[in-house]
Amino acid sequence: MKHLLTAIILTLAFGFAMAQGNKTQTITIKTKIYCDHCVRCQTCGANINETVRGIEKGIKNVKINPTDNTITVMYNPAKSTPDKIRAAIAACGYDADNIKATTEGYAKLDGCCKASK
Figure 1 (cartoon, rainbow, N blue to C red):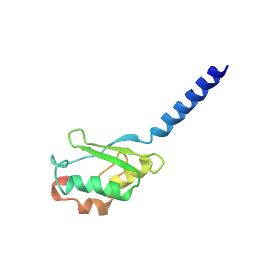
Figure 2 (figure 1 turned 30 degrees about the vertical axis):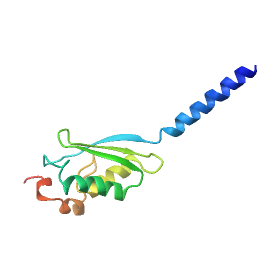
Figure 3 (figure 1 turned 90 degrees about the vertical axis):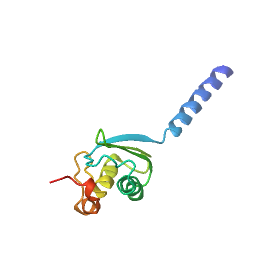
Figure 4 (figure 1 turned 180 degrees about the horizontal axis):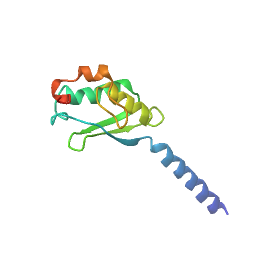
């Protein structure tokens, strides 16, 4: 009986530790990236990475994929939500799924990052 109680306690403790250790989630957001150098460009890539992190707390990593037109964000769900992340990306001047880029954010983009008319 003593071993059974110990096994139950250890199982519960392990389960609790695993739940506490998983503090990040990942979301992939569709966007439209018009230049082919956003990842390495100091203004384009830094704009998305630094601005999203500055606007929204709990962002762990931002990865831009101009080939797939996606932005993948790792975040702490206790500090942020997918909707807040989409709003932060829109504030940078990029569409984020169904949220359109803000006028102010779009105006700040380099010419290469804007849609050609």
